[in-house]
Figure 1: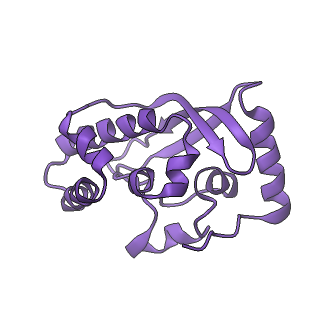
Figure 2: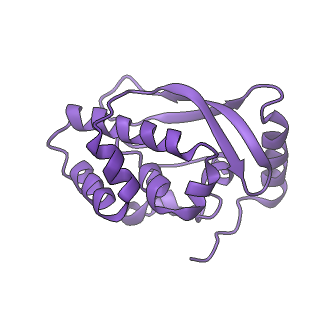
Length: 167
């Protein structure tokens, strides 16, 4: 991911887990590549994916606040915040509360349309350069989604990425 949570690339399983309704190649389209924060607030498929959506939303807004503090001159970040403030009442309400937190690991609770409930630990890896790029890793604990994730992985191996849902 890029500094503003834009998806720069994903593997087939990651794509199927968080955005199977989008074209697998969409990160390659620079002008309109997916943005995980935008999707969280404006994309119904993504909203339904998170069993604890509000928790995810608070985490996303708090992370944007951290980024805004580090890069107040970032015009693309300002545009993203402006878009979300105008288009999402939930974002606007959370943004006004000024949460600030850098979250690099925690649990995420998914309600996946193909394999059901998953509880995955996520970890954000940041390279030592100043690019702002990040790698997001998901891992299951036994009994909390490992079987569902394995089922999804087997399906990805045999069928490839999901066909995008028409919008």
